[in-house]
Image 1 (cartoon, helix red, strand yellow):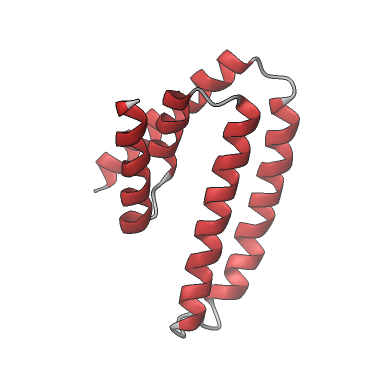
Image 2: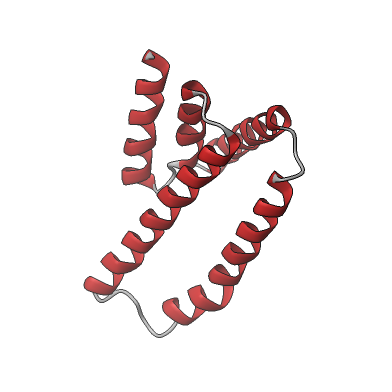
Length: 118
């Protein structure tokens, strides 16, 4: 569908330029009619690959200083692991329609937040 192409391209552009691929990717997934399980798997894969790429590029460029890497490991990794476990737990108990509405509402709120910060 045209909407899927537009929002898929937007996810790529925003992900590459601003590291904000989530909201357009969510809208793309909605336009493609992904099931909640497929949605979670694809979003988790895209975010994991993107994050690993950023860390690898920072390491290659020598930007992983004494502060950055330990701080990332201490703060981000536990949060990601807790989020993945909590998401798996919640997804088994949330209606797919409610899941879709929660995700799209969160995307809307994140988009508003990004606009107000800029």
